[in-house]
Amino acid sequence: MNLTTVFAVVGRIIRQFGRDRRTLALIVVVPVAVLALLVWILRSPLATPKVAVVSPDAEVKRLATAALTEGGQLEVVELETTDYRQALRDAKVKAVYIIPGDVLTAMAAGRAPDLTVAVQGTNPTLTRLAEAMTGKVAQALLPAVPRPAPVPVIGPGPKQGGSAPQTTPSPIVVPFVPQKPVVHTEYVYGSSAFTSIDIMAPAFIAFFAFFFVFLLTSVSFLRERTQGTMVRLFASPMRPAEMVLGYTIGFTLFALLQSAIVLVFVVYALKIHYVGSVALVFLIEAVLTIGGVNLGIFLSTYAKNELQVVQFIPLVIVPQAILSGFVFPLEDMTPALRALGQAMPLTYANQAMKDIMVKGLGLADVWPSLAVLGGFVVFFTILGSVAARRSA
Amino acid sequence: MAESAVLLSGLRKNFGAVRALDGLDLEIPRGQTFGLIGPNGSGKTTLIRILAGLLRPSGGEARVFGRRMPDRSVARRIGYMTQQDALYGDLSARENLRFFGALYGLTGRKAERRVNEVLELVELSQVARRPVETFSGGMRQRLSLGIALLHQPPLLLLDEPTVGVDPELRRTFWGHFRDLARMGATLIVSTHHLDEAERCDRVALVRFGVVLADGRPADLKEASGQPTLEDAFLYFADAQRKGAGQ
Image 1: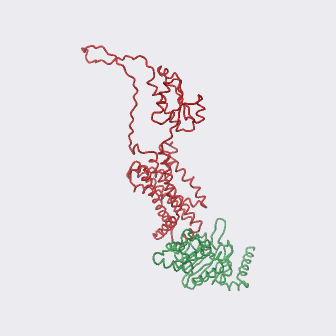
Image 2: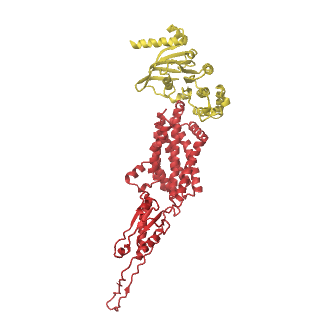
Image 3: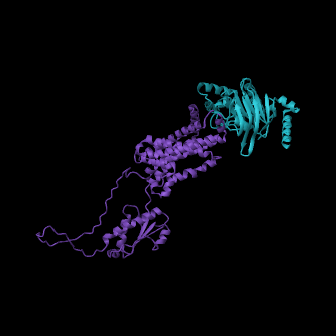
């Protein structure tokens, strides 16, 4: 291994991409812009959906309305038409609660309240919310349920010893006062201040590093072939391994620079919550990008031109974006999907990044993820080196 | 005398079913300008690539300075100018030279001196800082030649160095070649310009992956009884055709 040769390659890559202002801007501006957009979306208050309550019983309607508006998740409006289906079709309201007039008497008789919620059915999240709110409505109706006469309950008398004085048991009335539960959420990691974006940001940083390094390496390696420099390189005393190492170092430096800028932006400008060690974050990034460089080298040998390199994006990048657990949590997936996700290097990088940035874990805890990631990197490096040798 | 610069014996190279080189025997002594003459597809580029260590022979052997190719240890002693100008368009002429120099172990002040010499030689000193993508075809060709001789290799493999080059520059190139030969370098130049072949010490006429004839241009003309090298080539090609017909 000749270090002069390796650093000649590193220097060349830095010079080439350092001069390519547009690409430099792309690798920094894109992640920053995407994250900023996500933060904007996820931190913006959601629009309050309008719903309506339909019931012949005014008291029921009042109680239901109060229950639905409480918490500010929904806004209850009056329907201008008697045809609630038309109102939904016209998008005047997002959901309509239909409560029969005899609901209270039914409940008094011990039957379950019969509530209908009509929805547009085009927004599953809203449908879930509308359904969940029916529970609150039912609860709100409880105090209004006419109660039968108080039932005397015989209290337990003292039964110790036969000689105890016999007292007349007084009737105890059990009052029916529905108490709202007081809910405390206990956080093992993070706090109530953490929103989805705080959980997603670490994975985003890893994803962008991987994506751009993969793209840049495969395009530059392809160019070496198409512009003929590859042939000249392999006619020189340089070994393919030295070339691969030079590429790896050069592009990893760019990836780390990108990550540093994105990280600073994310933490200081977007105020993403973040605990854990920066050094460890960079270690994960470095390992991941080494994998990205070598995967890029390997796959570029299967591309004839830049368009064909771009074709690898839906093949290599998109499945990882979906299945590596940064949009959809991997642990919620079915075993088959989880297995697919576990076959992807980005999954382990995401896991490690989350463990470090959200949970604040150290190397002692994240090493399994790092080890698997390392395994992928070794595998890709072998593929990359073989590919480089073959393209000579 | 030391071993010859290049020694080929029964050299064959197949690409699938295509026989690019079909049993080549050739000896090229040191210090000569050797022309590889032949039409497109005759196997000139394949031969040069084998000599550059880029291709592995399918049979027979190719020796460069006594080492059986491919052998990375002789790479430092070979300068290679490819048919297509292999340059980094986003780097300047000087950066291209520096990069390739470093691959051949040229670093520091020594590299800087040599880069300046070469820029001077190929008359690119004035534009050394310009990105190569702004260069004309002739400038690129000059830079390509400069890179090939940057590390002062004793053997230069020049694959059609004058393709697409105007007559004036071609003359300059051949002037450089003569100077290099005078300094003791061995040059292997592939071309299909027969007037260039006349300038070589020796030539080999290559067709369909075999050497039709090799020797000094004058000897080849004499042996074929033809007035020009072009006629001599056609004469030998005809003989090959007849031979194949039998």
